Length: 410
Image (cartoon, rainbow, N blue to C red):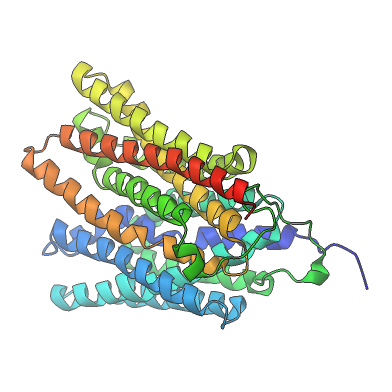
C-alpha cells in the first residue's frame, strides 16, 4: 500500500476559488443604484426585498442541503450549485425593461430564489468538504475560505463599476454570474472529501474531544456547548447584519460616505482568516471572546464619535464591526468541527446557520429602533452593545462547559 501523501495544493486552491465564486450575491449593493435608474418605479423597499429575502432562502436551503450532503457526491452538488447560480443571474439579466412589475418578479425569482439556492448548495459543499483536507489546521482552511467569500463583493464590485457603463447593469449581472459558474466548474475535479489513501496528517484534537468523537445532530443538540455556540452566533450575526444594513448611513452622518463600501467588507474577510488561526492557537471560547469584545469596543467608539463628532473614531468603529462579524463566521465553522467531529460535520454546521434567521429578525428590530429614534443611530449602538455583551457571557459559559467535558473525558 502506497504511503505517498496526495498533493493538497490543487484542493486548497479549489477551496479558495469555490468560496470566492459563491460570495457574489453580496455584491448587491453595487447593483442597487443602476437598477433603480433602469427601473425608477422600483422603490428602495423593493430593492431591499430582493436582497433580504435571499438571506432567508440561503438559511433554509443550507439546512436542506446539509441533510442530503451524505447522500449526494460533493462534486455533483458543486456542479448543481454552479448551474443554478449561472441560471438564476442569467434569468435576472433578461428581465423586461418595459414591464417593471414583471421584471421585479423575474428578478426576485432569479436572484432571491434560484441563485440563492445555488449559493446555499455551493456554500455547504465547500465548507463541509475542504475543511477535511487540512485536518491538522481546520481553523486555517476555514479562515481562508471565509476570507475569500468575504472579499467577493470588493472584487466583483470593482469589476461591476468598470463594466456597467460599457454593457449595462443587466449584462453585468449575467457576466458576473457566468464568471462564478466557470470558476466553480473548473474546480469540480478536486471537489471531494479526502480518502485514507491520501495519507493526510492526523486530525487536530482538543482536550474537550480527545478522541475526535463524531456527534450526530441529535447528540449535538443535547449539549450545552452547541446552544452556547448557537446563541453566540445569533447575537454576533445580528450585530453584523445591523451594521451591514446601516453602516453606510452611519458613515454618511460623519461625512464619510465611502467608508462602508471601502472598509467593511475587507475587514470582514481579513477577520475570517485571523479568527481561524486564533482558534487553532488559543481555542474556540477565547477566540469568540476576543471578537465579542471587539464588537463592544466598536460600539463604544461609535458612541464616542457621535459625542465628539470626530470621524476617525467612527472609522475605527465601523472597521471593528466588520472585523467582529467576519471573526464569528470562521470561529463557528471551526468550533463545530472540533467539538462535534467530522463524520456529520456538514449537517451539524448547517444547523448553526439557522442563527441567520433569528439574526435577521433582530436586524429588522434594528431598523425599527432607527425609525423610532427619528433617524438617530444611538439606539443601534445601544442594541449592538447589548448583543456583544450577551455574546461575551456566552463565551464565559462555553469555557465552563468545555472544562466540564474535559474532566468527563468525552
